[in-house]
Image (cartoon, rainbow over all chains, first blue to last red; front, side):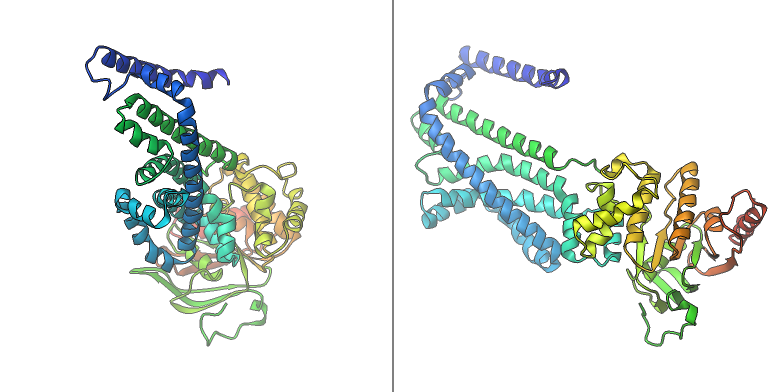
Length: 252
Length: 250
């Protein structure tokens, strides 16, 4: 890593250290109950000591998140492209897509579990339900915002709708699509937890429920730390992928 | 394209040319063009000059079949449009941008690239085949866009203020290469510009449009030998005549 990139990490590291230091101080001084808020060192200790307990749950949740994101990507891209190519589809489905985001997951999650069981299927469905939305909205906006001059040009060349999508609208919507995907990455982790709360036998959301019940607060925080790390890792992966794919400079 | 069934019978020389008769186009309450007549013969270069907002771009869209006239008739062969700002796609290389019209027409990638590459040397673009538009100068971008327009293989080229965004020196060079290219490959050209001098240097005939609503104020035949020099007395005189017809006095 080059020196400038390393120096960019200094500021967030200092902020984190100060925050953790204050947090540690507050707990050690006895200003809050350790059962409500364990100190960072206790969370770190739980992460290490419960690692054989947490690892399979991390694996379960990661599987759900990755499959859920893949499903939302297929659904989101398919829907955005259909809405772009056929205005009637846009008019018909946009209110439904927006409405789907107002449905509280705790209301529908038990229903999904009842119908689909305790396995992977209801988790993927819930994550996809939450994550397709930022992908659809960002991508369909991106598809509409291609360069008007280039659009005119392709029309004058009698390009088919599919050619317009392939040569112009699709590539020009990629940065917006990646923005949606990065938002979805953060939301997917929450979706997995909500899905696991509704009924599951393993996963980080499952461990949150059981650890809270057993007053193992440090373990619950350790699971939360893993969820945060997972969201950041997914975000970083999509940001990296975007840099690899979108190699051109945005038009001045 | 004919927008009216009883289109006027065209004089023979306009069969591969353009004939606009009494064309009117409105956008809501705004009359963009009102009773415009325009003829362009085969292999003729006609420059349409007028102030901003006189409906020049609308005229091009009508000729390219991108929009329909409210009244009057438009007869034109298939046209290739070169939009005002080059319309190059930032994710494609110069070569792939130049080959775009062929790709859209269904030519394979390799064949389209080969056809585009044949023009690169003549336009001074050798060595820039794989550069993205952002890495090209303004003048080079216009040349890539012009190759793309040529390769559309249409009898009529519609150039929408192609050099308006260039600095004066680059524009002078661009006018030179455009003149040379058309000498090599004659086409029917409709050049829309707000630059009277550019029109005098390049066109066979100049059509002056009034401010909105656009009407033809004057037609000037430019019967001067090529290549023309901007300091030549006849060029200067014609430029002054056009400017005064547009109400500009120096």
